[in-house]
Length: 194
Image (cartoon, rainbow, N blue to C red; front, side, top):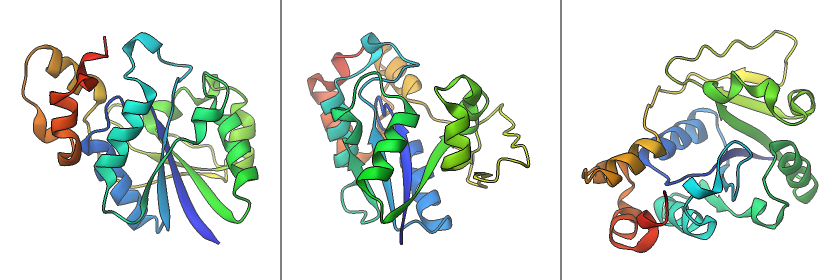
């Protein structure tokens, strides 16, 4: 059975931290594939601060080109918005019954997981990998047998940092994957965000 990691996020924009973490997880957790599930609209974020979903998907596609384990996914684009993880997991398991999925989240999201829609269903029915984030101690109760911490490297780069640096005229090109530097800096992509 194919092992697939589901790395969901707004990727607003995708950056080298996303790619390094995904690379580590795909190799050290022995994934056959890792899908970047681009979320058109997260329930936790306002639309005004988001690049267009199609632009974000294109940036992920360009960023991962050439690495056979990575896939850019627009699976949530056809779903009702905002995207709730439990709905995505239900649908993706129905659409791909012959694959084994692991949902990947950061310790920061794990710390507020009890506020997610139907979080107990997610914990009980789906496998979850929690990666470290600075300032968050991911404590996982023993009864949550489907949830596991991974010993991934701590990478503290955020899309917010990149957007704010760009707004202040800072050249942070090396935090952005080479495949999208020109696209992000020289097109309208960087200008559609607030």
